[in-house]
Image (cartoon, rainbow, N blue to C red; front, side, top):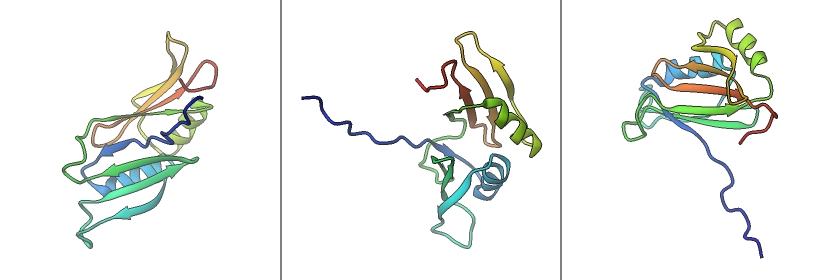
Amino acid sequence: MKPTANILVAIPLLHISSSKAAEEFYCTGLGFTKEWEYQPAAPEDDPAYLGLRRDGVWLHLSSFSGDGIAGGVASFYVREVDVLFAEFTGRGVPIELAPCDQSWGNREMYVRDADGNSLRFIQTGNDTHK
């Protein structure tokens, strides 16, 4: 009898220094929607933990000191990386690596946030993630 899969989803968590600056970059620049936010010291902006979503994919951001370090990486497998490139540049988002064809068969684009986190948008050669 084959066991039932037990892991349902993985959500990247990136460390940020400013929740307001990150919200502006990720929501206004990259098109994510803030679904919820936890701010225990409100009205202070930070520390904060944000739950963002785009196209049914989740991303968490945290400015809590125990939640990792800045400079992480999150990979997003996408249908059309060039469409995202046009969207992001149209909103003034700086692109670290413009869409390019990699020797391993993927077409990839990289964006870096103010905290040094790298967001990699990957279109596989066969349009499925590995």
